[in-house]
Length: 196
Image (tube, rainbow, N blue to C red; front, side, top):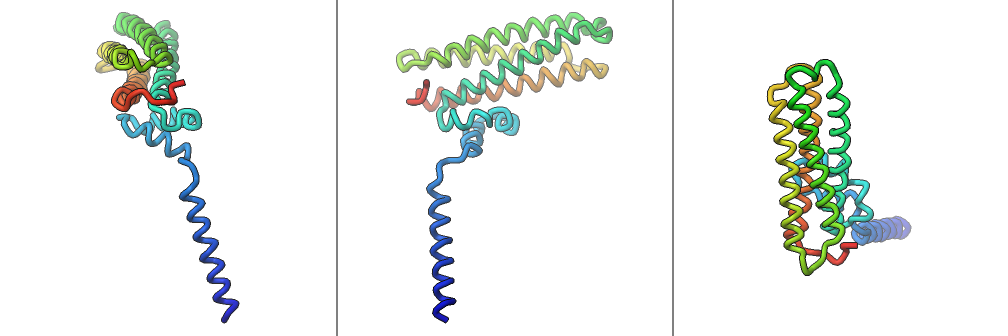
């Protein structure tokens, strides 16, 4: 009986120490990205694409905003390259020739706006913080407008290629939407101590 009580006591002690250890472990990287992406409209996309930044961004809104804009630049460049390739397809030369050229121009403008946003995010300072945030949100809103303008030319796509163009541009706009949400979170939370 004493042996059984000792085993129960030791098991209980072990269980309590494990629970205490679990509670004291640092915030997991999965939680960091989920917390950051909680403000975005396309949460699953945000979590999947920004998860690699969890160990460096942790709880820093400025780092999450930079990561969001960086990922958006990469995605928008990929879509623009795809559009340039598709432009030469026979199926895209007819009624889609002009909308496709307009779309490429819009996305190239979007890339410039995204680079400008990232440049400012890298140089945030307390003195100009709110003006900087105003510039960034204006530029990211312009990027969304560029995507919408591009999508206007593919409103009712006919054919497989036109539908693929529309879907890729639409997905790229989701990245931009998420980046804008992360920037807005930064603007409302203020400049943190982990800007570098």
